[in-house]
Structure formats: C-alpha cells, structure tokens
Image (cartoon, rainbow, N blue to C red; front, side, top):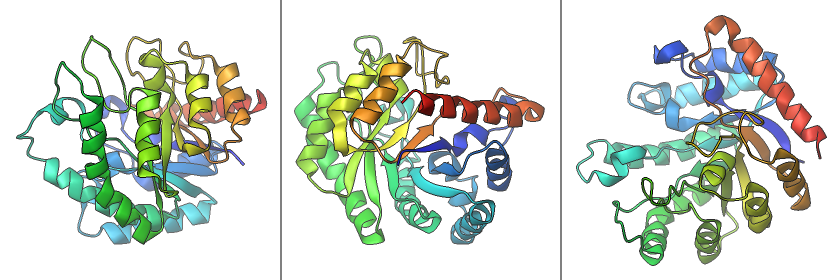
Length: 293
C-alpha cells in the first residue's frame, strides 16, 4: 500500500542554516509527529562535513538503522548525491569527482538502512541554448549505467527523478519533460530502474501533475511531494501552492501506486521550539491527503 513518509530534509538544517540537527534528533521528532516511514536525504547527509561523508560512515549508517528500528521507523527510499544549480555548467567544479564517488557509498547506505529505492537526478550536459533530447538521453544512459549496476549488485533499485524545465527563463534540465523521462526509463528497460516524481518540479515546469502520474503508471517507484505557485521550486507543503491535490491523489489511486508518498519540504526557517509542531502539522496534512482517496 502507499505509505505516508517524509524526507529527513524536513528536520535537517537548524534555523537560518546555522548547522544541522543530528539524525537521532530528526528521527525522534518525526516519530513523535506520527511518521512511521522516512526518506533518508543522503544528498544533505553525505557532504564532506556531514556524517555519511566521514570515514566511519558504515558505523553511522548501522547506528541510524538501529535507532530507526528502535523507534519503529522504516526507510523505503533515499536520495542520492548529485550536482546542483550552476555546478552542472562548470567543467572545473572541484567537487564533481567526490559527488560521483559518494553516490556509490549512498547506494550501500541505502541497503544498510533497509530502503528499496534510491532516487537519483539525471545528469545534465553543460547548458546549450539548443537543447538536444537525443544527446541528453545518450549521456544519461552512459552516466546511469555504472550506478544501476552497483545498485543491482547491492539489491536496491534506482528511481530517476523528473527535473525542472524552466523554458526560456533559465535553462532546460534533462527529464523536465515527462515523455523524455519515460523514454529514458523505457530505453534502460530494467525492472530495477523506475521513476520518482517530484510534484513541485513538474508543476513549476508547467506540467499537469495528475497527468504526469498517470503517464508514469507502474514505472513510478518513489515520490517527492511538494507544492509551489509556479514562481520557483519552493518546496511548499500541499495547498500552499496551486497544484490540484484532489486530482493528484486520485491519480495515485488510479495507477495503484504502492510505495512512499514522501514529503520533500524545506523548513530551515522554523525555530527549533516550533519544529515539532511543524512536523506534526505536515504529518496530519498527509493523512488528510490520504483521506481524499
């Protein structure tokens, strides 16, 4: 069945980005808010100064799994490492090799946490005003292949996330168009490779979210649930933006989606004292969305 989940990103950064909560603080707060399923955002946890980026990462992953088990929390999906923003366009970005190497570690951590799917962003070619769908597909087939092979050996699946298509405003990202991402998944043609829909990415790209979900069908293995007003990838909670949530929930029911319905929401502005109430509100909002089905 579809399970209510949240990314650990909801309880990650301290107010005003002055550091981070520990993973234990995150899990304790999220469990108290009612969450029984979590999405480990390894992107934010595996930087050089973060716990999964340290030499004792295996011990950290084992301790995290043990703490989650004690609380009755299960991990079903994670988010792997990736480049972001203008890093894609910088051929001299110094951390690129670290990011790619860290993805293999994220695959192992995903298995250690007991999750079934690791979400990955597709790769993006350096920005070119004349976007080539064919070149992007070929680049991604090459880029994803070693990660898919490593994931299969480990026993997990890779879910490729839809990206943002800003049209002529900023740049065109690979996978911003549903048909493009579906074509990539179908070309790979492997049961261990599926899709992750980020509802906010789709909406800000001008795509009708429920139609995207129905197009994806049984390819859909993971979710990032967030909203916006088509004015940016703002990661707002549902109903704080303009996505049609009634039809979106019906679309999940129509395709018999049975994996995580996972919130991916930023909340670093919330004071620590109010964070538990915020997490509880998000959990209850999720339950209301489920009742819409």
